[in-house]
Length: 216
Image 1 (cartoon, rainbow, N blue to C red):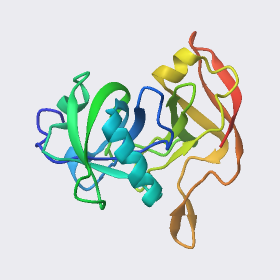
Image 2 (image 1 turned 30 degrees about the vertical axis):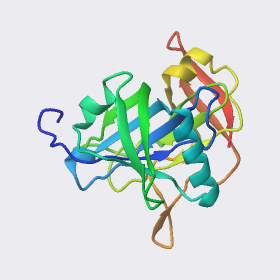
Image 3 (image 1 turned 180 degrees about the vertical axis):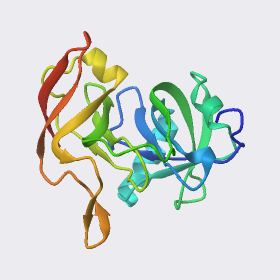
């Protein structure tokens, strides 16, 4: 896919409203299943300048709806996300004219192409990619097959037994008791996470299965 992907503009959204002391933010790639250049799931950590941090805070206070960033120029996504300290100008969509800020790429815990094979099935239970740092713990839904949904939630704290190393690297967790197929209500796909607390399981550092709780 990488060699065949054209250079296009790419969009990201804010994964957590908390800005780190180092002016870092976590972002998620805005997936589009209708275009092969955008059939990816990406979780990344980027840094902002002091000026850009203040601009983002101002825009967020004005409108707390989802913040969407769009690259100013076209890119091949693989090249864009695999160059550490790469500086990427992006505009905050739907905001004022002076809304261009610069991302400095720090880390990419997840870069995954979505499998469109007809042989792909839904998992037995819902899967999420869990990652972050001490101040921000994020769960991003893992898209398995179509139709599916994109969702990001923040947890109130680091799940017990999840080490800081694994949190930094990111792990795929299964949410127990939540069916892997999309939840439909009146024909509409809705969040499968209807409670504030769930039991999750994941593979630990020594490949042992860890069962713990997550609180949204």
